[in-house]
Image (tube, rainbow, N blue to C red):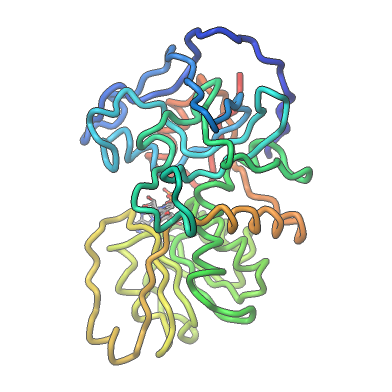
Length: 338
Ligand SMILES: NC(=O)c1ccc[n+]([C@@H]2O[C@H](COP(=O)([O-])OP(=O)(O)OC[C@H]3O[C@@H](n4cnc5c(N)ncnc54)[C@H](OP(=O)(O)O)[C@@H]3O)[C@@H](O)[C@H]2O)c1
């Protein structure tokens, strides 16, 4: 289980290199060929930005996409990995990072800002001793949470929260199906769905994954593609091609399929006849707003929900952790300060 990492005072105040885990160049077929562990410059801190000494940073599939060059322009390399994190500001505040960097001056929903980016797309990420982020992206670390727990909130839990609360429109008491039980987003969907008062069903390809789904709070678990006892009010998708047909069969007439990703492939059949005849709503969802991030943190504090961290690694063990993620190890992996 996660442990709280104590605050170390700043070791460096001048512009010196810092230890970082970064992609030197993208390699589409061999993502680890461009992975480097070594020194990169300390981040510059523009006006209205803050520097944070990273205490914990979680791994996301997005880091593997970055190593492959997906979602990042070639001229952005070398790029320090890590979209999420929690740490300590130069003036000693414990914070968790809201992961979307918006266009300066943009107001309203950050997820519809056309110029938005995540750390690692345009700005250097959190797999380093320090990271710089806009000051508005700093949210106080909740007292009930350790740095590693808070470090997983940004991408996976925020995405799951928006899918469940904002995008699905489903009330407590609804029956939902979560596709997958081992991954970051599905873990968060199962935990949050249960805490929101939903009847949660989940699938997994493996016995280990199904056991994990039950441990996380799913009421019932199924093999991929299994016939369900009844159709559900909503299906929550991050898997894509390999589960999409099942999702369309699993949802009740008038129900909703909320999708945030397509790990197994981006071109699922839309099953249009079923879509219009059963009046199924298919809704895309991406990350969440700063306001949703704050509400997610309040929700965790109010319900006692603590994000699940399956394994922690020191920053210099990042290659091992990324290889586990690539090989489909279940659960959420977090890097901690040395
Ligand atoms: N739009 C957004 O804002 C946003 C945010 C976060 C993530 N995402 C995307 O969402 C996806 C999931 O992210 P993640 O971090 O949760 O990834 P992950 O930790 O690698 O999880 C992958 C999940 O997919 C399932 N899975 C993988 N391959 C499968 C296959 N061939 N057949 C069936 N199930 C399969 C796994 O379930 P079992 O092993 O239990 O079957 C697991 O739950 C990624 O594509 C990511 O890019 C999008």
